[in-house]
Structures are given as C-alpha cells and as structure tokens.
Length: 434
Image (tube, rainbow, N blue to C red; front, side, top):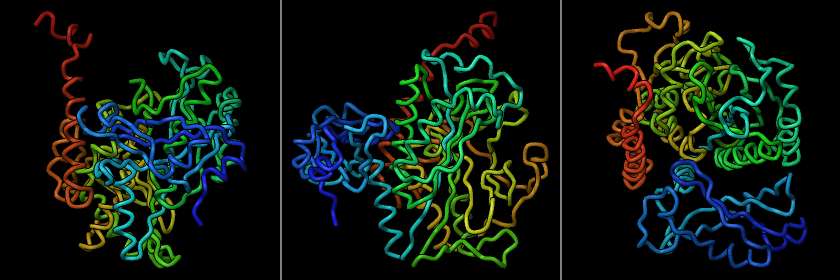
C-alpha cells in the first residue's frame, strides 16, 4: 500500500519535508516543504529551476518538478521534525531523462524484465576535518599506519556513535565502524539491499555524516584525495544479482564461489571499466587517488589497472567470498545513483554477451603489476581522458541514453576546462626559469 505522507507526518510528528534530488555532479538539491503542503507536493512535485543545479538545462526551460518517492521517507534522527524524501525530477510532464535517480530506475526496470534484481552494499570512506577544511580534526592522529587505530577511533566516538545510532534507528543494519588507512579517515558499514534502496541511503548517508560533523564543530568530506601523502577515500561497492529470491552469483563448486553468470557480469564490468571511469571517478581530484604514488601507510589501496582476483585488495575487482564481488575503483565523489546504474548496465551486457574475464590474477598488483598478462589495460590517467571514453561508449549510449551521456560529458568537460585555466604554485616553481 502506498505511503500517505500527510498521515505519516501526523503519526511521526514531522513538521517539514526535505524534497530532494541528486544532480549530475552528485549534489543534493532540496526544498523544505511544510507538512501542511505535502499532499500537493506529493502529487505535483516541488518546483526547481534546473539550470540552477547541475542538470543540463537553460534559464529558459520550464520548472523541474521533483516528485517525492514516499517509500524513500527517512525521518532525520537528529532533527525528528524533518522528513527526507528522494524525488524523481520531471519536466513538461515527463521524467528528466538525464537525472541520476531516473537513470538508475530505468536500468533497474530493464533488468527486472528478465527477472533480475541487483543488490548492493557500499563502503563509504570519509575524512573528519577541522571546520575550515584545511587539516584533519585530530592533531594526535599521526601514526604511519593508522588503520583500525583504536585510540583515534575513540577520540571521534561522539561523532561516529551518533551516526551509527541514527542508522540503527533507521533500520539500516549497521554492523561495524572503523578508522581507515589515512589519518583522520573513517568508514561505516551497513547491510546490503536492493540497488535503489542502497543508492537512496548512500545519498542520505553523505548528508547525514556532514550534518552530524558540523553539529560537532567539524567538517566531513568524501573528497577522493584531500591530502597528497594520505590514502584517498574510496566507495567500494559489493554486488550480487538475484532472481526469484536466489543469488545467481553463488556457486559452491567454484574455487572462489562464483557462478558462470557472475563471471560474465564481472567480464562486462571489466570490459566497460574505462568507459564508466568518468562516472565511478567523476572529478579532477579522483585521478590523484587512482594514480597516486605510495602513501604514508605504504599502499594506496586503489587500483589503476583492469584486473580481478580472489580475496586480494590490490585489484580493481576483489571476490571476498562466495556469491558477490567488490568493485574497488569508485571513490567518494561517485554519484550514488549513476554508480550502480553504470555497474548494472555493464554487468547485464556482460551476461548477454557471455563475457569472459579470464582467470583470476592472484598477484600483488602493487609489487608485481609487471607480471600481469600482456594487454592488461590501464585505467585513464585523468578526467579528460575518461570523459572522452565515456562520450564514445556505445554501451553507455545504449543503456543510459544519449541525453545523459551528452549532458554529462558536456558539463564535466566544462569542469575540466575550468581546472585547466588554474595556475598552480607548482607550475611557477617548475617553469619560471625555463
């Protein structure tokens, strides 16, 4: 039965609703609607000027109407009088084709026609910084190998526990929180679910982490590489494919626990890795994580080559156990909706073609990358190279749509152009005396 938002507001004591959508750059855009108006908003949507966010529109275009999905309702645990709603953007009575949540739903619907359901879990890494964003927030967090450092974790107990308590209250099933490999970096895990549910939760999680950090006088960032000498923030995605309640990826007779379907799905993702890289790693800064030199801890924990293996974290795809794989390329800037949409589109294409990823490459790619087979592909070196591949991708044009590809490449290329116009201190230092 459909959720009646007006009834929910009265029942839960909600006074306001954040009607929210995510634009192409992954930014949450919202309007705050009083509960008294939510009936009309639920039918007609909240009005936005699309050009004012990162959607490919002009000031002359009519309003974008963001129609909330009642099933996505999340009551803010730290401000219970507010309810958050993921919304689907419409314009002129039609879904906005290049809006990220609409794209994911379209790919999910196509998969469902063959009985497929993709389930995902995400590992969102982030840094807790000083309020000005210039340094990590904990001056005592100085270990060369700070991963799992109990003392550093507990010094940020108030922030981490408040976020985890919120996820417990929301029923997400959080199960572990840890200090990650960089000083000032943390990760929080919750249970996997349907890809759309996880995407909505990831979008809200990023907002929640930032809001709770601000409440404690800190700043949280999911920036892929905020410090040159420290490990960057990834967004590892755990993927499985289901049909009629059965995990199609699981095979107890296989050496690493994967079915033929799973291998074909992985093959599709590997074949498309360079094409989707501008989606999984969408900023200029992303490529400073992928192509980083060794960090203070001794490893980047980031792939730069299209390979897969068993339980080996030096590869783009890791199989940590039977029935699923972990995609390790994506970073903290990845759009919560475009990331799973790209993975599902690539994986289903792999199944359709019977793609073969080859045998798992169980070597240490950081120390023995030179032993990889001839023809092993490197990932793009920068955002411009990645965008060129995305723009030429027949797969993405077919599955995600020409409108999305053209809009995304155009807007992201303007971001690259803006970056290219910047004059850095390094350039002056290295070139002034040329």
